[in-house]
Each structure stands twice: as structure tokens, then as C-alpha cells.
Length: 89
Image (cartoon, rainbow, N blue to C red; front, top):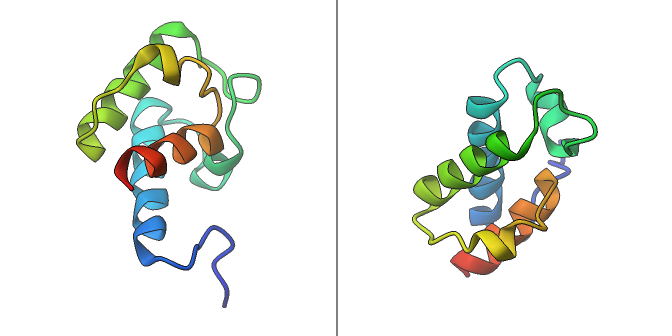
């Protein structure tokens, strides 16, 4: 079975799963299968406070310094994952 979010490098798979866990921690009522498609428009409660909480958790989880100005535009699971990958490359 092919993993649709898998990249050539297994670390991307791990990053994906770790980010899913971060999202699930902040948005605990969101079904895990919906998380990869999550945006503020599709997730109830994704407001500015939840966004800052999520980004803080992501920073802790991945050991990266979050530039909130840069991440302010990261308003989807996919865009946050992309920035995490760039920050940890």
C-alpha cells in the first residue's frame, strides 16, 4: 500500500505524523484523517489564539524557532508542513 503523503525520504513521513499529532493536540475533536486537509475555513475553532498555540507546539515538537511573521501566512496543514520541512532541512 502506498502512503499518499510519503516522500522519498522517510523523515518526511515522520514529520507528517508528528505534525498530525500537533494538530490533534490543538484540535482534539478533528478526525485525524481530516487533518492533512485542515485550514481555518474547515476547522471549527481555528482562530488566532489556536494558530499561535499550534505554531508554538510545532516549534517545540520540531525544535525550531518559529518566525511568527513568516508562519502567519502558513494557514493550512500543508503550508505549515512545508515550512517545517524547510526549517529542518
